[in-house]
Every structure is written in C-alpha cells, then in structure tokens.
Amino acid sequence: MKPQPIYIAVAMAIGLLDLFAGYRLFKLVVAASGFIAGALLVGPPVQAHAGTAVGVAVGLVAGIACGAALYYLYFVAVFVLGAALGAGLAGSALGAAGAQPNVVVVIVCSALGGLAALLLQKLFIILATAFSGAWALVCGAAYFAGVLRGFDAAALRALSQNTSLVMFVIMLVLSGFGIAAQYGFTARRYTLRR
Image 1 (cartoon, rainbow, N blue to C red):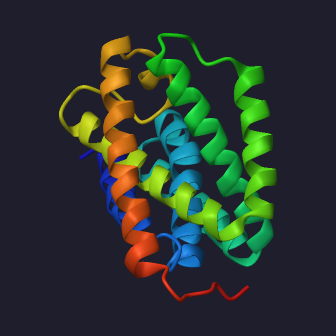
Image 2: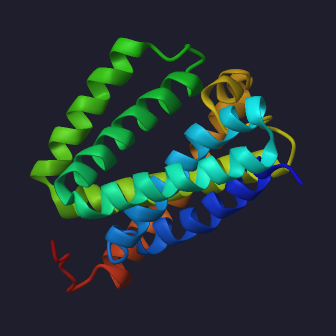
C-alpha cells in the first residue's frame, strides 16, 4: 500500500477531532497537525527518490520534529494556525470563484489571519480548528472517492470550478457544525493552559 492513503486517513481522523474538539485538544491537535504537515511535506518527495521505506521513515521523523516544535511553541502555533486559516480560506474562495490562487492575496490573508489569531485566540482557535478539520475531512473524502488525485496544491488546482465550489460549501457547512459543537460543548468553560 502506498503511504499517501495512510497519511490521508490519519489526516481525516485528526480532522474529525479538530472539527469538534479542536479548542479543548488544541495542543494535542497542533502537535498532530504539525506531525501530518511535516510527514506530508517531506515523506512523499523523499519516497519518490529513495523508495517507500525511506520515505515513510523520513516522513515520520519530519512529522515528529514539526509536531514537537509546534507543541512547545504555543504562540507560534497560534500564529501558524491563524495564518493557515487565512491562506486556506483565501485559496478555497479563489478556487470556488474559478480563479487561480494568487500568491500575494494568499500571503496577505495568511499574515492577517496570523495576527488576528494572536489577538483573538479562543475565537481563532475554534474557527481554525473547525475549518481545518472540515477541510481535512472534505479533501480526504474527495481523495478516497477518486475526485481528488492527491493531497497537494496541484491536485486542488486540477479540480473543476464546480467541484471546488461544492467542496468549499461542504467545508463551510461542516465548519458551522464544528463551531457550534465547540462553543456549545467542548470549549464551554474551558481555558487553554499555556
């Protein structure tokens, strides 16, 4: 079995936790998200050049390093989470509108999202975890349904405008359920310890 489906299945499981309990499990989810980001960014390219076993091993090491870094650097994690939310929403909205992602727009939205996350931490942690969890579930479902050929920017750009729009709307609806669940149940009367 190729490692990418395994990474995507794990991303979907963490996305489900992120969607409904992201604030309460923030430090754990950030560490897990860092693990997935490190593993997905490093593992597949190494696997393409050095083979599956080396790719998986290097992906695991990169994932552990990224996860540990984000766990212990709380404010960096909050900024990165807000920046990822800004970039993800900008890229998704541009894709749903039929436009190619504009690097300047995505960078500006990332910076604004990161700064806003530092100022409004609880709100942004809930928003970012709900949106990122929903996006992981939607992209994972699209991948396993054969609609999405990979879990990277090139695969997302290859989608039709209608498919991007449908995925974006589903992500927004799922995010709404996640935000409601977090404010109503999992984040109520709970404050993160730094």
